[in-house]
Length: 508
Image 1 (cartoon, rainbow, N blue to C red):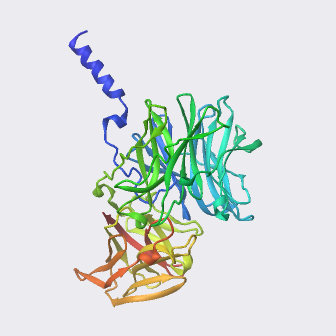
Image 2 (tube, rainbow, N blue to C red):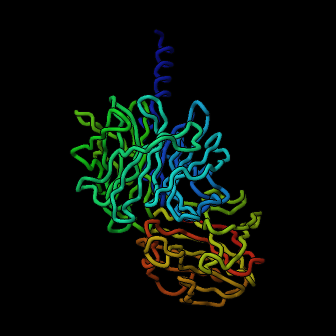
Image 3 (cartoon, rainbow, N blue to C red):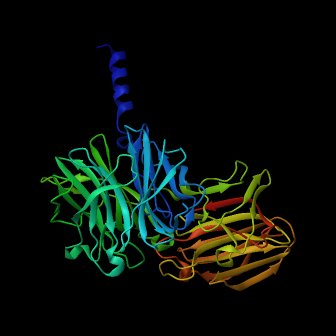
């Protein structure tokens, strides 16, 4: 072989090498509040999604070439909630049918008529295409959540899900039932695969993901409590020669627990790349905790001598904070990272002068909210606002009226209307003015500086000088159950008025 041919062969081998083998995994791969992540590969790209809770557009579609660096390219429901569903938009699970050339997105939502948590499905011709909702597939009395699609050893298509018995102090079976190839409905009888029957599992098992290796079906699953400062979520694994069982749980479970960087890891999806298996799961950063939310973490699986997968405490916090910085002057429209309450139909326009966000008194009288998740404990959030005589426009840290499940939205922020600047807190439709100041009726820079996730200091650039507005505020009482804070643009006032935002900048 000539020297040129040898060099060419070496280059080809390097080019074909696995992308993850050529770089370090930089966690979190999905920074900010991205619970219950799902992961698939279609063609040359990987696609992921995550829980939306009550923030629309619902179920972001992320795209990546390497599973480490992601961008938002679509939403399953860009126009808001399906007509049948009202809230609790959780746990999307993506599945690609190669024969059909079609993508399916399973998800959980609460039915308006029955008030039951339901597993539903939508589909699209491609991950970046328009999704069509097919509605609920199963809605048990105790609730049905955390869907996962797989085929059995004979090629039959099955849907797996959790019965939400823990909501009533009961067991949480993992069910499997055959589903039609067009995903329009379930077939035959359901089969219980396993439930929480071991002491380490606590009050529940959930978030099952199936993959195959070594002649086994393996099921990763989560147990105990997912959320909040006192969470104790862990990951276990079970295996079976047949999809419908019998299933054997690993006697060394749990296979994943807290480490130095991440706590309460769980509810992920396993994917194979060139013979290696990786788990994308959510966890709280040990420093960021509940103020940031559950972030997407990627970790390589290892194997025991007796063919059990394990996760040997390798995931660290590797990503540079500066890589999370964000800025937007709205000259290219509205960045797809922005979200709003699923209960509101927002109206806005963008032009060379910035964003014009229609005001309202919605969202517990906070006004119209346009938000994105926080990604760190310490950051500086800036916006340039042009005052309006009718619309009060500003920026806020958005959370909940209390730390209970499903609490109303609440927040603390600084905003301007005409020549008045106000630092305020709004909760349960009660507004408290903390500080106020007269300002010139001209474009003004408003700033929130956050330390330790909950210490808030408002500032404003007035007459070329940066001034503190009020003293440091403690916002721990506003952190929402299991979700992390959101950074919001706020436009409050009559529907015919608009808040005018020239630019936004977030530095971590």
